Length: 348
Image (cartoon, rainbow, N blue to C red; front, side, top):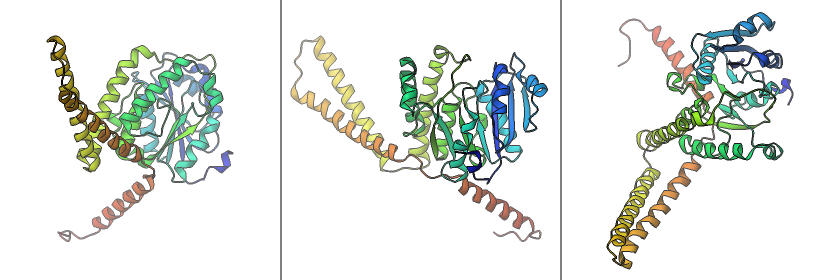
């Protein structure tokens, strides 16, 4: 896709969080096409002083350097760029890492579905091309499969893969609806963003891409963040289920979830307790006891699978940013109309 094929219906901004990427940042900036209006380089208290380096060396008039005085992680740096882009009236905001692993030439492919109204948020997927997958280490494939499944559970986006991919684009109307102060600021940032978007019922689209791996070193240490990822996904799963099926809505799926879990729990506890007692007292378990344990488990599993099917089918398919734009405009117009009314003429 050529750059000219991007529909010129909004201002596009790029946010580049920077931490130990001084050797790559200028090349990344130079490869960003003319369709981009603004480039926000966010120095996350980088020990290499990447922000100061960009100010001195970059001649791109679109570049604006944001200096953070405290290192907050990739999420905190990205959110700083998001806030400035919103304040400057940008329409679509793209996030690209500064280490050169994400090709800026792919930016139109990420932006186009949003500008066309087919998505609210797009993200990269490095596992789409089978030739790329064959070159990846087995441990990376396994780890991403586990993380992807955990993310599907906690966010409700069952059709997405590669959840930690940091090449993303989002419409400003959707970004304004997110609780930016509540989003995780470290390596869980991308996964937490998906959870917040799921609560908002935003339409998210995977974009096939190929990562560029060279001599750069990742700051991510799997062992250091594994427990945090598990804790974060479990917390988000519970929140999503409560919000989606018991607070904002209550449907047959809500009943299926409760009944299914109750039957599974009863059958499992009843069967295990009787097996434990009989095993330690040399008592033969009767067929009635076995059936009283097995039947609730079988029924509960079937009912729970029915709920799971409902949840998978409920993945958001319609972009909401245009609806949000209409709502915002209507609200602004209504506010303006009310402000013109004489004192004491408000409707009751």
